[in-house]
Image 1 (cartoon, rainbow, N blue to C red):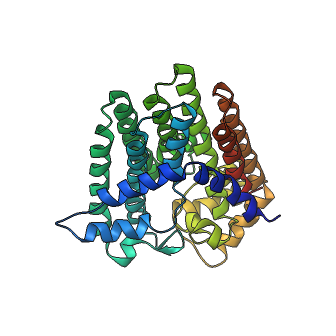
Image 2 (cartoon, rainbow, N blue to C red):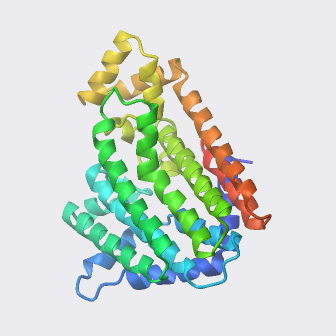
Length: 333
């Protein structure tokens, strides 16, 4: 069985179990991304939202609510909120990173311009706040509002930390918790909260989302140095070219001799990159076992995610979430 088959199954099973709810989420997303006065808004958002993303984050909200026994309508609003926040951050990220490809397609800022990407991202953030108010639950509003602030904070921290060789694994974890894991953990936590789940279960759902998000980002960082373009939806080596100090590089820098450190200082801190530098970076990552060590960290976070589920009721969706943690790291197994 190929890796791709392993990768698809848990997500597909989850999507199947949540099909009717996801249909309602997609309908709500299409309805709320409309704009009577600014037709560019639905043009830009449709390009990204309809680009074949797996809708992983809203699925996590629906799964958490189902697992906690929720039978009301508002998990749909919360799931759509999560997707809008995610899409807004993608639009902004592509401008910040000057990206040209997202999910294997040209980015919105390339097809339109940076101004459109930033302003439509702002619009989606505003829409997400309108949506998150509608359930009338102050705690879910607080969780999602806090996550939005944490995501922005993580992105700003990355601006300075990503090109500083002094950045260590604890700062990296802070960045990842901000820019990626915060939305995963908010997505799962609000599902439990809207269902009125006991506190221990709400905490377990938060812990699951947090650990899953960290594993997901470490794997993303690994794939940048060793994944196929069609797997990762961007070009191999983008993080290197964008001078991002991700976990494999942090581990290599920590073990570097003076000549190697000088290389990293030139290509990451100074941004002075030449032909053959990416290949040299890959050789150094291999020499110090940095990819293997980062992969082991990702596996550890996936195990933490699975352990958190022990607090939750026995349910087919719980098994799917456990499989999902395995799926996330199977991309680099």
